[in-house]
Picture 1: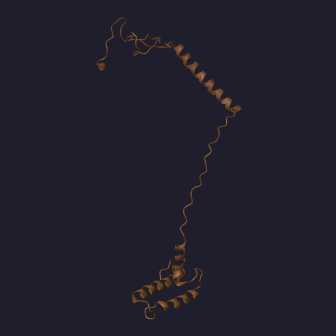
Picture 2: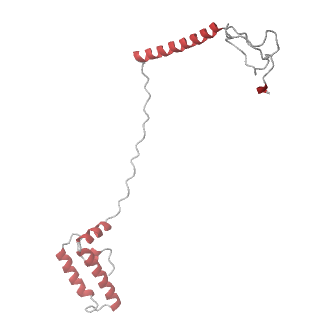
Length: 169
């Protein structure tokens, strides 16, 4: 009495109506009921219990729907479609008039900044190129730069030795 599913147990088609289901159950229950069968008692009880369970499951429309869904083979998840990724070919194009104008303005701004910076430094009389104090071979000592501004007057008399402040000690 081993059946793969309830439909085979009741010997009906999966699309059988409620009336066909009831008739199949009555026919088979007479054969497997422990009081009316010539099978051993334990085997008859087990077969009748399986028969009842199958009938209860298939007679309820909701249970039958759930059971039918459980019988369907589980679909394998679809393999993702492997599409080769095509890298776009870089396209070189000519610069537009507006882009050329913007580049020209940037160039003019850089040249103007350099001319302005060097011109102001030259006008103020500062050295344009000075070696740093840490540069090797530089024998530079700390010297005060001559002041070209007339409003800056030294507090020390000319030629007097200047001592460092106490804050630096």
